[in-house]
Length: 282
Image 1 (cartoon, one colour):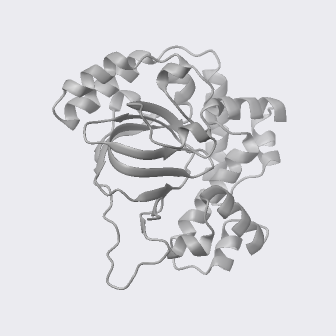
Image 2 (cartoon, one colour):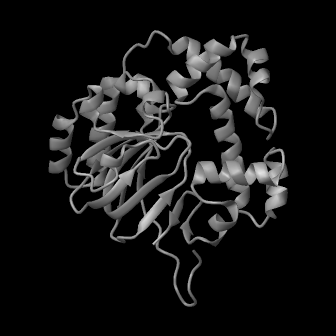
């Protein structure tokens, strides 16, 4: 939808942000966000794993991922969720006051002991995956400000870190991907990753699903989509976006963008949004 004449763009979240030094490389940031706008929003995927704690003042009508069951698409009663907006959009509606950590998908294994693929496009209560957050929830409820809450969440996550047998293998695999991405703006092909890592397709896919949440092919496709999303937010014509992001043609680009975003590129450009990731539907 487009803005009516005289209508203002919905105000952005004004998050409080903390970068936890002891979790560098695992946690992008810990943030606290509060918004009393009760409309419905569509959140674009970026392949991260998140843990969220709903704080006082939240009245969440909808908070779900693309693979959540119908039972999880109504009012959410949980006070905390672990989830990943992997390659399908997220729906959020209601009043939101949330403390969350935005993390590398590898955090699913490192912090929660589950493969990232178990969270792809899903939200789960921590207890469903054997994570007891009740003591932390009790602590968070007593703390008066974001600084104290963010440090408490950081300390809890640091305590959960442990040795993981497959980590060195994953670091080698991830390093190869980083090297490929640094070579240029083009998203590499699966066969290029095979050549650089020396891994079989089956082994590379196992590592990719376990640590990144998606198969290698889908991980690379997400990377291509993220580049396309960046370009769609520029004045570049959509036909040029398709070519620059490496799609076969504009039809292929439109199909994939709609699959990942839940909305076509042209509709995306017409929809009120706060930044690239947060579209306001109603």
